[in-house]
Image (cartoon, rainbow, N blue to C red; front, side, top):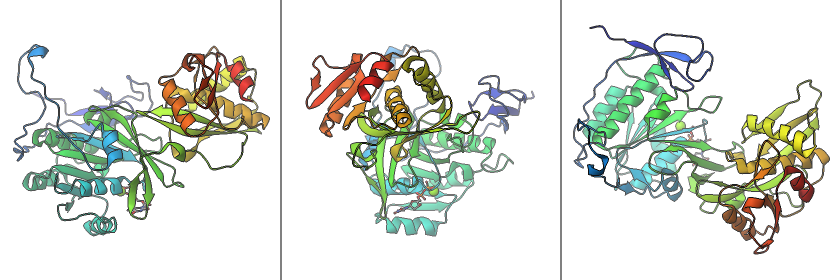
Length: 458
Ligand code: TYD
Ligand code: MG
């Protein structure tokens, strides 16, 4: 019986197709199909010393879910609290975590520090395909890690890595990076879609069968996704992104997907000369340090994950010489900016169609929630008119297409955070405003429509 050996995977959405075509039928992206070789691969992981036999269902037949015994996956705290928070409360046995981020952001440093912090409790193996073992060891010494329980392996062939791992039975395995790995079963180059997919599949299977926690380092593409197919993100249990401004020493680790915890949870670190240090109380670090009110700047309270953060949004609006003025946004979605500017024109009466608009979220952090809508527009209008917002003012709120200001979750918590940092005025959606006009020392200005918001802010 002949079996299909080749398939085509969309590198954007991970959809699989039988034959090549120019456009992915699932997500509509052009030129994203890459050939992969389908070949069953079996690697026996052997029993782990913990006796763990994996979580994957193997009992055949249909069962009533109520009869299935459930168990809390035991968690091991890594000892790095910000990392534990992003993981949803520590490491889960047999889980596979993908850590993505720009080169030089600190992925290798963080994972080496994690293995060092786990120490004797969960002996770790650091597999490097990018640096030599000497470099890894030198970094470990410089970071002041307890090196005794740590083992290293410089290897890129996944079969040999698994062979070694089966023998040395680490509890935590770091693979740096998945793009350097290759399997003997395929002839494609390392880093290609089929290699990334197949090596990740073998490592995932090993993690499930042996109970080892595996961390995969993944490079990101220019667009900010993890290089290789989206299928990688589907395969693993958690996807963490390391973000930050190369000019700033602060780094933010964000859970993008997590089968064992909340997504969008943030962990904040500062890169220093002894590696990454946790920033347990990060609220005010995403504010730029100008002294008085400045035009084109608005401060918002974002609540990504379970913790409110004060973040400054800056806008620069300038007359454009171009027929198609530029809309550039760093840290915010580009399409959302275009939409907000249309709402601003239609419902706020402020047109910027002949202006270049640049938006930047201070500190290299990426804000994904809609609560940023109102502060973005306030910053835009403030820059356009060259008039600063009132001093010590924060704002948050979603802007709807008909110009209404919609409430966002956890309003009270955001107000509390702003009050505790000495802000005196808050422009918020009516639905988020407390009954009284004051919230502690904070004067709360509730707004229903964009036009009202512009009026009270400027
Ligand atoms: P690295 O972990 O190698 O980044 P990645 O694996 O994501 O590519 O981090 C490298 C950067 O971190 C490099 O620019 C130097 C800086 N760094 C420090 O500032 N202090 C330190 O103690 C270490 C280990 C690195
Ligand atoms: Mg690295």
